[in-house]
Each structure stands twice: as C-alpha cells, then as structure tokens.
Length: 306
Image (cartoon, rainbow, N blue to C red):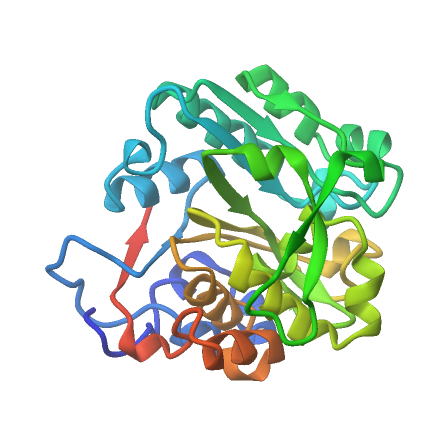
C-alpha cells in the first residue's frame, strides 16, 4: 500500500478469532494492494517464528548491512525488566534477541552488547528471561545496568519535562543502537513499546513517573533515536502489564513491526494492540513534537505474511 491505509485483514489470517476480538481494531492493520516501492516507513510481518519474521522484514529494508557496517559496535536493547519466564511475554522474546545478535555479527559488527536496566533483580531477570543465554550463545556481550556507576549524565535539549538524565555508558559509546521492545500492556501508559522501552536506558526512572510520564517518554525520544526498532509481538501481554500475572494474560500473535522511526513503529504497534496511535498520549506528544508521523495512512507500509 502506498501512503494510504494501514491494513484491514492480513494479520487476522494468522491470529485466532478470539485474539482478534480481544484486540479490537487489529483486523484493520494490514490490507490493500502491496506497494511497488523499495523503501518503507514501516514493515509489518506476521505468521512465522521470530527469526524468520525478522529476516523477511529486514530484507525488505535493505538487509542488516543497511544498518550495521563492518567493525561497528552495536547495542541491542530488549526489555529484560522482569524475573519471569519467556512464555509470560513481559520481556522480549529471547529467540528474537539471539537472532538479531547473530545477524549483526554476520553483517560485520565488531562487538554486540545486550543490556537493560531491569525492574526486578538484574541477575534473575537476565537468567529467567532466557535473554542472557540466547544473546551470549549468539556471540553478544551481556552487560549489567544495576549500578548508577554505569550511567553518565546527558542533557535533553528538546525536552519539556525531561531536561537531563543519566544514560548507560555502553549505549553512549555505540555506533549502532537497535531497540527491541516487547509489545505489551502497561498499567501507567496503557501500552509499552518502542519509546517506553527506552526507560531501560536510564538510571532514574522514578523522575519520569513523578514528572509527567508521557511527556518524559516523548522528551527522551528527542535525544535518543534508535537506528532500528524491532517490535516483538510474537506473544503479547494483553493485560496486567508490565509484569503480567499468568499465561492467561498472553495472546500468541506471531507478529513483528520494524521501522527506523520510533514514532511510526509505536503507531503501528498501537494498532496491533487494538488502539489508535492518538489514544497513547506519549505517541501523540512525540508526533506533535515532530519526532515522527503517527498517521499511518500517510506512511509507506510493507506487509509481509510468512
């Protein structure tokens, strides 16, 4: 489809009727004729395992070498915030993280790091999520973020509520930054995805919660723009987020969104989640601040069924 409508049916083909009912506007997400263009604002993939969906999506964006050059240092930032098993979908799918590490190294990356400032005990989160093992097995260096000593103060010139913060030093030194959030429900923001995942980059998240959380999320996006956003919607925590309570909170969607623009990625993910982008306040703030376009009908969107 060109810059017109963001989809009505193809995701639905890969999701159960019950899942579609639970996600409201999900059925509108992918429809219309496939565009005859080579560059995409958003790529939406459905129907496969994480690695296969990533490969198909990144191929349509020019391949991994379009983002990672030989010898570069890459940081991959998944959600590893919670001491829960992968099936609960509170963290990013470990198989996806490991696969992206592998593709970065194949593209010639000199070093690949994986990290998150977790909410539960960091060691338990890294282990229980399965991400530590998957990342290391693929060749990444998994580094901690549980001490303020790992963080350095940065200013946010474009911020309204957030003027400065402390960001992890490994991210500051990276040549390439890849954001790999888990799409899920969140009690404070309704939806957690790309911009919200960047809260794991910083030390003092409490300040954000005390000082207009949605605006702080958008503010930080003026400073830290990932080179690539890969939304994990393989299993989606639909309620009781961000940690989840039981496996009954999870819907298996077998979907993924890729975009170089964080606002466009979050806008597409909102539709996957059954919401309008404008209903998520931090997406609306970021759009109004000129950080990206949340109007999906104006974007070039590629839909792929695996």
